[in-house]
View 1 (cartoon, one colour):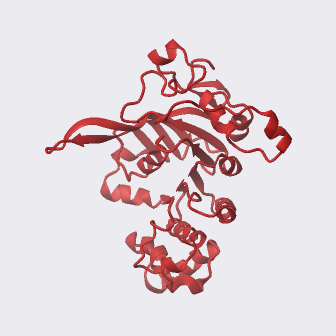
View 2 (tube, rainbow, N blue to C red; view 1 turned 135 degrees about the vertical axis):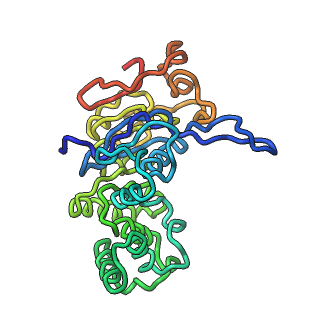
Amino acid sequence: MSPVPLVRVENLTKYFPIKAGSLQRKVGDVKAVDGVSFDIWPGETLGMVGESGCGKTTVGRTILRIYRPTSGEIYFDGIPLSSQKNKALRKMRRRMQMVFQDPYASLNPRLTAGDIVGEPLEIHGRARGAEKQQRVFELFSLVGLSREYINRYPHEFSGGQRQRIGLARALALTPELIICDEPIAALDVSIQAQIVNLMQELQKELNLTYLFIAHDLSMIKHISNRVLVMYVGKIMELADREELYDNPLHPYTKALLSAVPIPDPLLERQRTRIILSGDLPSPAQPPDGCRFHTRCPLAEQSCTLSEPALREVASGHLVACHFV
């Protein structure tokens, strides 16, 4: 493993202002991401899980500077992105791309599949004319699509084929990092495995690094090297895949994993399902202290008063809980 992480996120915060009234005055903030820090190493897949609204997508988009961070710093290959302006940031963006969740909404319906995949090559001045056409053919072949599809429009493809087009577009500029924002959530179960297997093959072939955001804990276990668990804008736990699934330490992680079906009916009957009470707190008004204390079965008075630090309790295993 490289001694330097490809991506280093330090105390990243992203707030969205809440405005009200005819003058649209700011009355508060949605604290989508609130002080998260982690590394992504070259060649690895970091899985990111959590309930809807916990800030996973916001983290991914802020790393790519689609959103400007409220505070904190993001380093890409040792370079702070906050110091990169216009032309320099544009060059950096060639090295990091995104595959979006909805293959139906993320493709321009007015462009052919070939134009969609070739557009980044023109925007960044990489190829034009016959050279661009040849590169598009190569990208189609890379993701398992026939070159005969190059002149078809997005509505003529299935969901799985559209996601392959989105993946080909992301690969057009030969990036090092791809942020996958729930890339299989909108696909049929039979197609999900095909897309994930394709992504793993491409990772080996092209030495790609993934930040893989998903709800499906079984798929995260299949594809990830390490897993990061988020809850209401905070990191609850971060560990190697096997360590996290075999020895979860945070109460929230235990509750999530207890919901994953086990294919063995005997084991499924023996285990205890953890049902969390209450609803997910609003990121506009997160609870004081530990974010999880309103639903935690272990919560005590100290949990409402102080926020637990994310600390290393074993080699590479970080947990934010007072009782671990």
